[in-house]
Structure formats: C-alpha cells, structure tokens
Image (cartoon, rainbow, N blue to C red; front, side):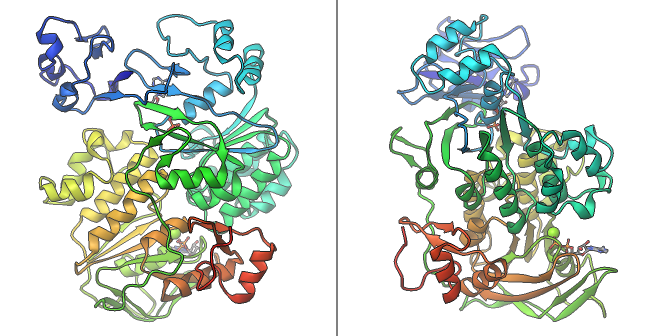
Length: 592
Ligand code: ADP
Ligand code: ADP
Ligand code: MG
C-alpha cells in the first residue's frame, strides 16, 4: 500500500513549471495521475501512481511525498483529505494511568487527541463521504478502544489540554496568573499547585511579561486544575529546570490516580518516571503516522532508542542510541581555546560569581544548573553583551549565541536569513553539516514568522552554528525538539567543532542530552534569583555528581545501560547517595 501526500502550503503551481505533471511517466502515457485540482494545488491519484518518485525529486518546493507503507497496516483511523496526512492506530487513555506517546513532531499526536476527545470524528480514511458512528464502532468491535469510542459516540468527553506551544496564551488572555488560574480551578486545588510549582512569586505579574519557564508552569497548573474526563499534556518540560520538571511530573502522577492522562514528552528521563505505558509513534512526519499498541514504559523507551520495534517488526532508525555506563573520557589532550578569568556580576537582586576556568578547542562543554542561577548571565559575559564588574574580559574569541527564548527575527524566508549568517550556504558541506541534520530543506522558503516553535528552534540552531565564531553558546537547544532531532543535534554539535579551533557550550536541562553531548560539565550552584556560582568545568563524572547531589537525585542503570531516575528514598537511591554515585557506575553491574 502506498500513499501520496501533497503539502499544500508548499505547492505553488503558478510559481513552478508543474514538474510533477510534466515528468510523471504515467501522465506521459496518457493517464491523469497528477492534475492541478480545484484548489489550485497538485492532486495525485494513489490508484494510478506507480510510486516511481520522480515528481517528489522534481518538485522545486519539496511539496510532495510518496511513501510505501509497512505491509501490516490496514485502514487508517483518519485521513484529513485526498493526499492529506494519514493516521494509523490510536492511543488508549486508561483510568488510573499516565499513558505516554513517544514519537516525533508532526506524526499525528494532536490529531489522535482530537479524536479521543470527540472533537474530530475519525473517518477511517474514507474522506469522500460522511461516516456514521455505527460504521466506526463496527470497525473497532472487539478492540480495546471499542468501549472508549462508544462513549464518545454518545457524548463529548471533556478534555483538559496543555498545548505544546504556550506562547499563544498571552495573546488570548490578558491579566495575571492569579486571574487565569482562578478561572480554571474547577477542582479547588489551586493553592497546592501554586506551592508545588512555585508560582506564588509571579501570581500578580501580567501574563505577557512572564518568561517561558514561568508561563509553562502556569499552563500546567491551569490544565491540571480543571475537572475533565481526561487530560492531555503536550510537552511539559520546555524551559523548566530539572527540579521543576520533576515537580510537574509528580503532580501529574498524583492526578493520574483518579483520571486518565495522556502525555507527549521528549525528555526521556522525565517520560520514564512519569508514564506507566507508552505508545510509540513512528512514520513520516506530515505524511503518515502509526501509533503502536501500548508498551511498558521501560521497554517502549528502550525500543525507541534501539530504533527497532520487535512486535511491529519495524526499524525506523539505522543506528541505536546508546549510553555509556562509565563517564566518557576525553578532553585531556585538547588545547585551551579560551581562558575565562574569575569574575563577578552584580544586579540589584542577584550576584553571579565565576571561578575562572578554561574552554578547550574541539570540545562540547555541557552546562547544568537550576533556572535563575545565572547561566544566561554567564553566557552574556562570555559573549561580551554584559560586562563583569570591574571591566570587560580581554579576549579575541568570537562568540555566537543562541538565546533560550527564540523569537522570529523578522519575516524573511529561512533561506534568506541563513544566507545572511554565512557565506557558505551554497557549499555541499553546509548542506550536509547544517541543513540536513536539522531537516531544514522543506522550510527554506517559509517566512520566519510562520514557523512553529520547534521549526524556529532548528533555524536558530542553524543560524548560531553558521556565524563565523570560535565559541558557540546554545541556551536550551532541546526546547520543542523531538527525540529524533535531539539525537541528531548531539552528533551534529560534536562534528561541528571536532578537530577545529572552536568549542560549543550547551546549556540544557535534558540530562540524557547533556550526557550524550558533553565532554565536560560546568556546574552552577547557589540560590536561584539570589546568587549563583559557576564552578568547573569538571569531567563528566564529577560534574554529574556535583549537580545531582545538590538536587538529591540518583540514577540507576537498566540492562541496556540507560540511566533511570531512582525513586526517592528507595534502596538504590539511599545506597547510591551514601556512595556518592549519582549517575555513573564504576564497577557494579546494572541493577535491573
Ligand atoms: P503532532 O501532534 O504529532 O505534531 P498533528 O496531529 O498536529 O501532529 O499533525 C499531523 C499532521 O496532520 C501534520 O502534518 C498536519 O499538517 C496535518 N494536519 C493537522 N491538522 C490538519 C487539518 N485540520 N487538516 C489537514 N491536515 C492537518
Ligand atoms: P538562568 O539563565 O540560570 O536561568 P539568568 O542568568 O537568566 O539565570 O538570571 C539569573 C538572575 O539574574 C535572575 O534572578 C534574573 O532575574 C537576574 N537578572 C538577569 N539579568 C538581569 C538584568 N539585566 N538586570 C537585573 N537582574 C537580572
Ligand atoms: Mg537562562
């Protein structure tokens, strides 16, 4: 079975030579395999198409996709239209459990949730005509979803949603978090959420002035405070530090005892402690998505990292993602790129102290620390946008900086913008090292101000690495990237500076990402919002231990070597804390 998808936003028959029609071998022999439809966009007949893929290659706007589907797939649960996105399978919300969906952006997760909440009636792929519920229920007879779908056929379920992108909230709501939260507190739980998520200090601020991390916590509280039949949270971690991630995860687990919860989360250490089961979602983003049967969370995550789903017999990545049980060595033979001096930066209410240190040529240096502890301030000092007390740092090192909160830099196209950052855009090296790993090709003609948060993040990462510089600082590059994209940037970052007189500093809260990406770690300690201290850089083992001992979080290893957060006060947690082994194991074997 094969499907053809036309990405309508990228199909512009008036601006191209209708290559999809001209070059189609079936059209040449007289069939109407590709035509320009009533909407003025290409329409491909899946019955007539032979899947040669010539139109896909010839289209100048990357508007077409033709893919062969895995054989086992039967009818989709939903297809938006002819040549539209197709969704196979649905997740099942379960009473008393947190159900995770693990997969890339654009794979149909929101579509599935619209179906489960009764907002979207699944059409079983038969988009030409109206389908009635009788037909849908017949299709699902004998499956686990039957009862659930029967309920939605009778009434709409009330679903409380925490959307992926929260930046729209200030556009639709003006007032304070207090006003917003009061209006959603249907369960009378507000005061406990305000405490647990530390919202009190910003309760009376104007919503539009909140930082991304503050807004995220307000949005989570607003969703969980509602009275609903099920709860859907699309990514809870962007802009939160590890402490806040765990606090949010605990609230969700608490609510899950009473109500079904479905979540999408790309920070796998958090997903692992948060979900009971996961549905893996795979396919091709914006073309088709398959949602598997539920798997136990440990097994599901491991299969995802392996890139192979044994039950489905599907390989979706040609290499596994592996973790080292021992702290990886490296960096010892590297030359110093940048020696930063001890320095102090005082603001009215906050002081940052930096003990001096060095950044080595060719290394990726991870930075760990709570929010509000001075990481961005430190980045600003290195970049020369801020001056330390007592005068500027003397250096010739050029810094390129990607801030934590990325805004569209105007309305030019992505290609125009990237060309303004580099003179090497047209080289195959640039295409191979920057455009490909970030999958930017389909976005090149899009105006910057139309990009989603995840797309904008990828463009901002590209722009940062494109500028001529010796030190690249990326503040939370993982925000809104899915797991596949996180895996790709770890390789890309290492490759970008390896063997060069340059280094990368990555500030991030996804502990797996920091583990995979870094050679050494710089740790920020102190009291958020009051004072911070930058210490290190340390080797991986010492850096992780210093950071995690402050948080009191230990990780054990499963059979595959993947780190998993220990339950606080569990036997392993206590033992590891006593031994000072927070993350890496020295000589003991895996615990599970
Ligand atoms: P995810 O939540 O996994 O990021 P979505 O369910 O939002 O994915 O979208 C999956 C695909 O379906 C996207 O390619 C999107 O373009 C397409 N899509 C979403 N909503 C519609 C719609 N109303 N009409 C047509 N296509 C849609
Ligand atoms: P992090 O990046 O670790 O989250 P920041 O460096 O952004 O932390 O901020 C640390 C503290 O410094 C915060 O309390 C913040 O309010 C304060 N701060 C940052 N920039 C300024 C500034 N320009 N003026 C006054 N206070 C600031
Ligand atoms: Mg910051």
